[in-house]
Length: 576
Image (tube, rainbow, N blue to C red; front, side, top):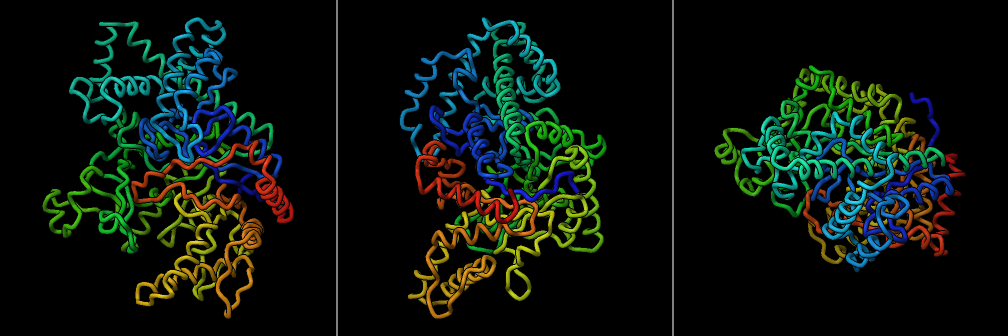
């Protein structure tokens, strides 16, 4: 049990989704500080974020090129934050971005280009900074050298060889850690100043990132609001960690998930499942060194976050694995298992290391997972840990997570009992995390509306498929209605999603017995946007921006009223 077991209400809002006056087309650390003030004012106990580590040119926050380096996309570029920039520099960047500033979706290439250009300007002027700032930067490089030196070399090689190329496409001269360091020494011998200038630039960017995020943490501490981070189960195949620590990873196996047996637009997903492209961990190597990589990863995370979610925690017990990288996925569409095995050296996707098909395998998987998670909990040093334990999980997992003090998710309309009724919120375990949805799903308002749409569109065309779809939609609405105490009339159609239904749903999740209850920001303001559509290359994934700045929310009576009602519900459900 944690030292603080107070019931808390939270809001899930990706840092990239925030707006503020003067931003550069994406959420930043100053916008987050504004939202921390908002949370303190409206009695919201924590803000849940998605991963904030650097992703290179990838848009998904779950494709980090480093388990430590922070993403400069979240840097705030006000003169007060980066004093080596002139106001004209920032104004020029805003002119360059133009429509990207007001766009409902983030234009990552444009934003990234503008911010890197500003960072280059700031770095060029930093040589003339005050001695105290230069000393502070030098101290940062010294203290963080264990990871920072390799990271800066990796970023130098990325820039040199093309940001879109993965390290296995680099020239032979820098294709492994030893050669990369020899290559660096050779390049420095040719032009010391040029090489050290670029290495210094990448270190400078990280110094700014850690400065700003440490300030966010300090601001949250002052306001009594907790920050909740996110630990992806994997690290990008094209990452500094994998490049320099290859003995910790299986480079020829990628983690993912099996086919789900439901309709999917993507033919590969439908047949084989999701291939996330993350290399599998060599757990035997990690265990031999005391899970050092994981411990350091968690220890650094807790310097910014008070609590964190472990993504796909099932992966600590067993993970579905693909014996090929995602760029080969198309080769296997439509092939039988025998045909796929024939072109892949006899190997097929499978559970790794072992499936849960036998009692002894279950016991071995359970023991493996518990050992690994014990190391995580030790490294967390009292920080609150939440498990993303959704989907088809083995029966032994949730009880063992509870034994370790890790809170699991409870999603009401996925948590019905054997009679088809929802588990009452009063019966949720105290150490659990109650929510209606995650960033990978529709917000609850969109779920309600899409169920109504399915019923209305299909009732006039009855066949087996439409009956199945209607049945699922009706069942979802029934379970949500039962959970929230929304009156159901068998003689009339299902009601439209109204403010009354919204408030009942919010009150019910907040009134649950769960230690944590969270709403997505879209659910608070009745926005139907979905942050990510798993298994798709949807052009809108990870690009959602709130339509308003916080100042505009405060100035709009309807939106301000939603905040006031949330605060009132937090108070009456004793989560204040």
